[in-house]
Length: 416
Image: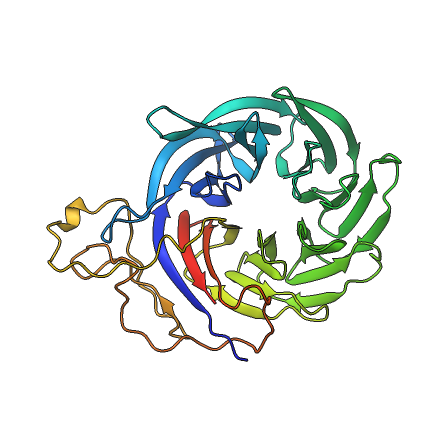
């Protein structure tokens, strides 16, 4: 059976600084909350200066003529290189942030009596002097109660930290790579196993026997920038190496199960939070793609999001159900809103080579086009014939992605 795929832009937001990380809250009932991190480099008095900003948004459908994304908070910070959210601590979601000052910073998601959300500082720890914290991962990808964090840095070190009573403590730190350790991640099925990657090597570590030597070394000709353990399928690991996505069986790391060329440089990989075969890839010079990894030997692309015009860095799936956010019918009368009164949205002018994307978010008068008022378009391009999950004959997903030099955050939906 041939399945059809449709991708639709919902809103675009200018982050002003270069955007490189996005993260939806995985903790119910806050699935509508989205964080976005930025990184801006420069020089002051011949000294490198890196600044950032952390944004907090909520996805809402207030009405048929309203952009769905509402900004809740913005905080000026050190430059942000990675964001990861986590299961509740003391009944609050916790967001981890890796910064250019070499710090790992934690924030809790709070809700006021009036119902508004905000981030509050919880704890921070410097993983080392004169280095950038480059990535982080939580040990709780499968809701494990043992809360730990692994962090990689620009000095080639890996740090494992614990979180207890709101405080971060370093459990171990070691020199893992000769170059920048771009990525680190836990195995969610055995959180004593840690993976890391640099400019030419993928390594594994067993914390039970100590980090004196890796359990394996897989050599590559280019950088290993992304690693993600599949939370639904034991032993399955996805890595981003140069322009390839590799799938591995963790019991045999001598050679991958499959290699899928995507081009552009694979920077981030995210497994779908509930559908075990779907993998989201951010490919720096080649947009964003969703892969279907049901068969071990191949991961065909089922859709691509190509509306960013700069480096594709951050991407994430939302757990928010779109069943309650169905397209609205056009209003019976013309809305009494001038272009100057429209709120916080941008217009995209883009001609898709496949003609399968809705790209205009405003009409010619500058008014917001809601999801139910689509511009004329041809039929979506067909995707490869696949056998999707039996429990998901159709699927609608909400996603966010961001790009660097054009400092843009996009929120979009995918229907399959």
